[in-house]
Length: 121
Image (tube, rainbow, N blue to C red; front, side):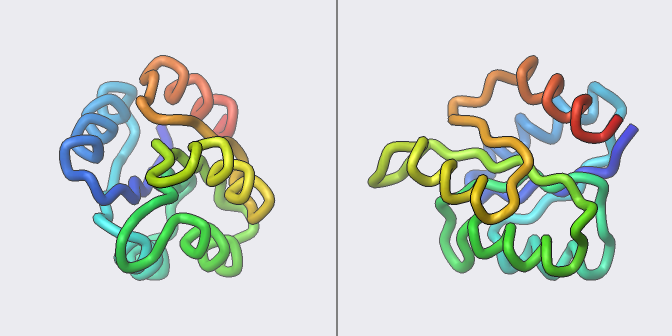
């Protein structure tokens, strides 16, 4: 079991991710944007952060940079549906800034669970 912070601005997607991860016995915390995610991570560091890239208030790339500056050990998975650009562009930037794994939306939950297992075991 891992502790996981899910940073996602779309409430329904955040809920689906939380439910999938809880079925795998992970302890899940949620944030609705990058700023909230960084503040939560400061108070309660987690084993893994799953963050969307394209979000209001603070985007995922800035979130990755800030969280990695607090903990080099934390594992980060970046997800993106792309917004106005192709998801691959955002995800390549996220990878350069410290994401350990990148996944395109829509999320394939079996793939997400497998990637988490690789990163936290």
